[in-house]
Length: 145
Image 1 (spheres, rainbow, N blue to C red):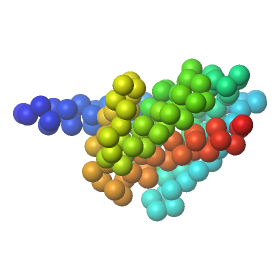
Image 2: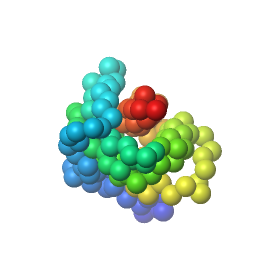
Image 3: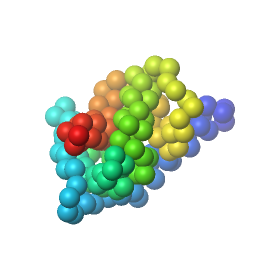
Image 4: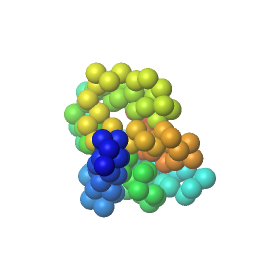
């Protein structure tokens, strides 16, 4: 098995792990940013809640329904943004968007499990699935200001 095939297999395993065992699943109660978004072309939907204090995302949770790509991306995103400033989270979203478009991106930023989604860029119909949670996060952070 070639290195590329082993890497693809590993990435698939990471995606399925986040899909079957989502991190940060649920809804934050109290004073939180609350965003609902959907992807009408495939039926994916997400309800994202984030607690932002002093310009920092202190917690994030999501609920939703959708394919393995959209739900695992939401799980990875909520893990990645917790503890980040609003600016850092938006910068991470920009890097993710560039990666999804197959563009060169700032690889000095540690993407962790999110890197497993880079193969989605080869399937244009699935890019909206992967970016749904990220678009919800951007919308919530821009309206929270």
